[in-house]
Length: 352
Image (cartoon, rainbow, N blue to C red; front, side, top):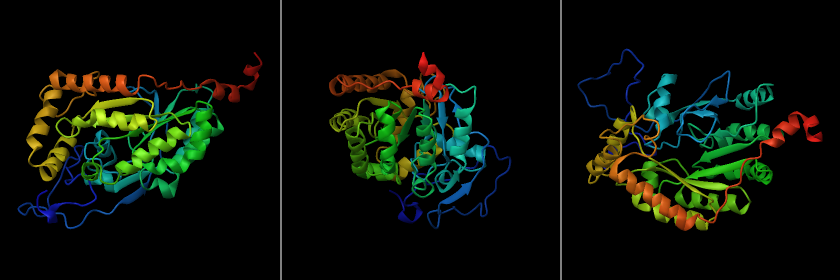
């Protein structure tokens, strides 16, 4: 793993690249290697956005709207594509991303204001389109729960993706919503190897907790899918069938996936991380990531960036298709109910 004194325990990123929007940067001691003394403590910084529901314009994402109660994420997943967005707030995509968390305490009020507007039409809202809505501080702040309470009150559909078993705290709301086809959940499962999980996603729920969460949600009638994401060639791609089998047995209704892409500062962060944690296979993994993205670690091409290209990407795609046919062929994911929201807002329509 490299020198123990140089490793930030409990963090994914081990470096803090300069913000690419800053015109000037400096080193306190440019001739002396900068060695972290202690793992940075997490700071929670309140911000006051004017809007909360964001239009999703990417053709690669199966959603129209997203809501992110937090910016930055303490989970510390080293591969996270959202790291680059922290630059827009004046922070680094590295350790800043997982230690400087921006919280939006007025989120629920803004969501209610938006869906009450005359121009709003019912359309599923994704919670956690960028950073996890159930990261650790949610246990105290309950911003995500307050948003769910608003959506339940208006009978508005919502989908959630998370890595945290904290979602079970809101089982009461989700169960009621699911009975009316207003809620779906996706649990992100990157590996069944707990040792790899601790290094790759240091502050997420354990593998055991995630599997328990899938089973608990499914047994309560809440449609739950599994996102095997990201697939990292040479690191976790061999687990596709095992993840599919385990999660299907626990009640998951479908399996999705994406291939890792290391855009912007994430390339530097990930390469530093893998050379410290898996020096024996670092070159193999990095070369395979390049192979599935046309020779680059990054990939911004719509249609290709989430799935990759070339022989290795095709092998991954074929394995996922086979796993779906073997373990999910007989399963059905219910459609969202969009009518209840309109009926509640325009009760006279129910007379026709």
